[in-house]
View 1 (cartoon, rainbow, N blue to C red):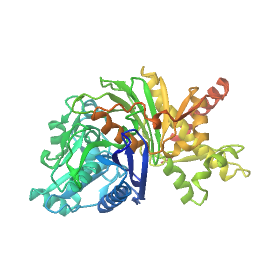
View 2: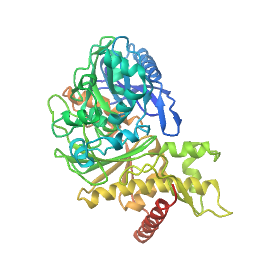
View 3: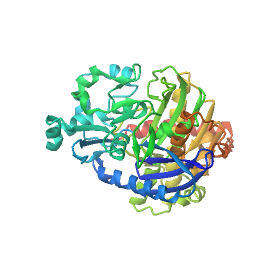
View 4: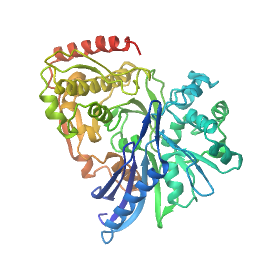
Length: 480
């Protein structure tokens, strides 16, 4: 198996990445290029051409590095889910910027939509907000003449980033998305696993502009004669090997942070959390479902602090946090709060500063605030009867030992750190391998982990949690 290779692509919020992964789970090569998000108030958008160009560039570099190393059997793609691309089927040109999931310009369209929140949630597993695709599509149809013209001419295609990449990579022969990506468009019914005609009508989105929905592991065409066999959302790819059993939980900490909990083959409605579809294959069409809670800002929180002039290297986070004697109270509502409150009007609040406070106190406070937001999500699921039996952590920010130790302390639960930081790419390769009938559960990458037992005394944890609840309630009461 070592001479058989899968090329896994990961187009994320801050970078386009590619990795060569053997059928035995060894990462041979990896490449990455940054992508820039243009932010101006509620506007958060990408140049769609850049997303494609950077992804193809790292793909080709990894393909070149693999020459002579073995047979390349598959390309597996995962990508950020709720960012939307609209392009012209005649030449593949984007018709407007790619609206990031963080783009809030469609807030009025979400509010004005006739479908009731309860109906939308029961059908899609999501909340009706401007941060999923349907309101964004409405906004683009009304604000970009090129989009309107392409629709009238029958040339408009609209899909998540993965669909846009796949369409270009296979020369326009396959226009498709899997269920993990389709669901994030707020137009997909998780009960029928089909586009929902009533919701399409409510948002005035024509069915014909949307991709075909296929299993996560399926035939997505080819690139340079290499079959594209996986299309997945980045969070579900990251969780693919980490959530094999009901009750397994993983926290992915990157630009944002996501807590995902496997609840088995039956969807459930838990107030404050999303119900997401896990990956599926042609053999297993019905996926396991996942309770999901996003935290809008994780790594981006520390980038924001840097932009304010609190200069530090993110590689030094642990040392900076450890040097803090009196961490600030920090409510890290950058971009508002996701689960379980879903209040995007909230702003960051910092309190408890004195003349003796240092930048280390602010950074440690931000890290603790992030941990409390993640704990709120896990506790929300537990209160609804979905207890996390095992909690793993992955993603770039999980390299922070301070984060994992503090989180283990306030939860009074062990946290397992997965050492491989290419979790999404590795998960996409894992899906491709298992769909081919190869047992990948024993990959060394999944056995390399570190356990953080709670070292904080229970009384101290209870006091810190109580203090957080009081502070968070006060922070939410501040003028917006």
